[in-house]
Image (cartoon, rainbow, N blue to C red; front, top):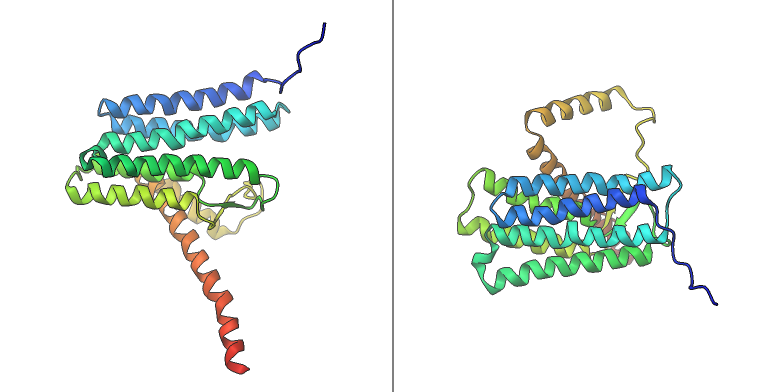
Length: 248
């Protein structure tokens, strides 16, 4: 009797972290549907932590597998694609009617495209950079905006429309060709200057004072700086061509 073909091995430990991340993202949707937006933001942040750990656990325990990679991608779609879209829709984007529905669908679709492109390009791109905003950075931009508006009672029509713009901007950033630094080459055991220690101390103090606002600001600056570097690179590459045409 012919044996069925064997599939990818399934390892329990990293899969538990991935399922845990999916669980956090799934229940973040339930929290937002009941109006608990701060709890939803915390759950998304928890899913980000668990998502960052599952790959490291797999590498440390030598339990990486194609099954784990596929499960991680599906989990990311739930946590950083579907969940943020429904959280901001449940917040106030539903008041925009069809426009709100289209906006959150565009975000979810772009998250799916971003993950599919990442899976197909993982072996050919520079590991120092992500091509397009990673979904793990896109989700806190959208969910963090909801958290800020809910905490500070920013519920006017202006902030609802601004939320739609933030969502669309984040969606298109995910499928853009802009390079975002991956921090994969950043290691804590490398030597650092004294000023770096002072900056780290300052950030630690700010985190203690207002952790949510500091973390959200960090993600916003991450996107802004990446866009500025992209614009400067375009300007720098065009400038020599202009000077060359002027000299000829």
